[in-house]
Image 1 (cartoon, rainbow, N blue to C red):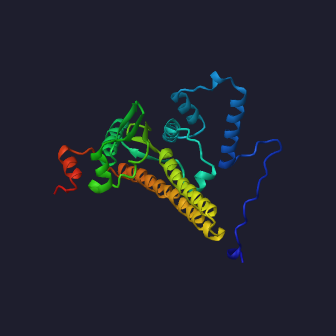
Image 2 (image 1 turned 135 degrees about the horizontal axis):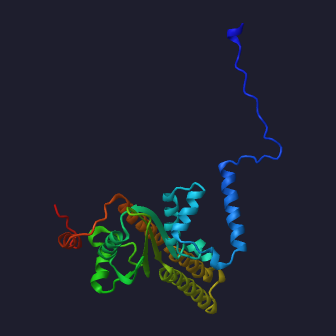
Image 3 (image 1 turned 45 degrees about the vertical axis):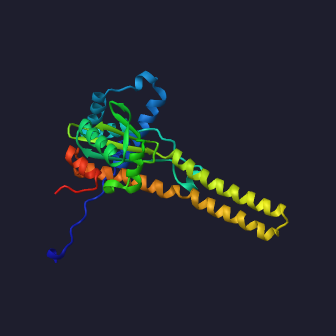
Length: 280
C-alpha cells in the first residue's frame, strides 16, 4: 500500500572531479598547525614577532574566539621552563620541584596581595625578590619562626616552609581573570634526605668492615651493612612525603583563590591566628 512505503534516502552526491573536499574540524586543526610550522621554518626570526592585537586578528580570521586566544596567551606568558627530571634519583626519592597553576578571578595586583599575605602569615616565608609579574619567597629564619613550625601554631602545617624558594607568577587573562602559577623548589631538602641516607649506608659499611677486621664471622658482620642499606633507603625516601605535602599546599592555595576564600587578614585576625585562637 502507498501509506506503508518507506521514505527513500537522499542519494549521496559525490563531489565533482577536481572540487576541494570539505575538512572536518580535527583535520582543519592539523592543517593549520602544520602550516604554521612550515611558515616558522622558512621565516626570518624578525618576521615571527606578532603583537597581541595581530594574534587576535589572526584568530578572528580563522574563527578562534578572542577569549580563548587571551587565555592561551596568558598561559604562555606564565610558562616557566623547568627541566623535567628523568633521573633515577627523581624516580626513587621524588622530584626537586613542584608546580601548580589555575585560572582564577581577580587582577594580578589583588592576587599578589593575597598570596603574599598567605605566604608570610601561614607558611612563615618572606619576600626574596619581587618583579612586575612574579614574586619569590624564601624561609624566614629565627628561633621564633622555628618554634611556630614545630608547634604548628595556627594549624597551617607550614608545608612550604622547608622549600628554599617558593614563587608565584600571575598574568592577566582579561579584566576579571588571571593565570596563577605557583612553584616550589625542594632541591636542598632532597639533598639533605639523600645525604642522611648515604651516611647510614657508610656507617653500616664501616661497622661491618671493622667487625670483619676483628675476626667476626662474615655472616654476622654483614648484618650492620644490610641494616645501614635499609635504614639509608628509608631515610632518603623521607623526601617523598615532603614533595606530596608541598604539592598539596600549592593546590590548596589555588583552591582558596578560586573560591574567593583567601583574603588579606586584618591585624586582629593575624594576632589571634598566631596565638592559635579563633576570633568569634
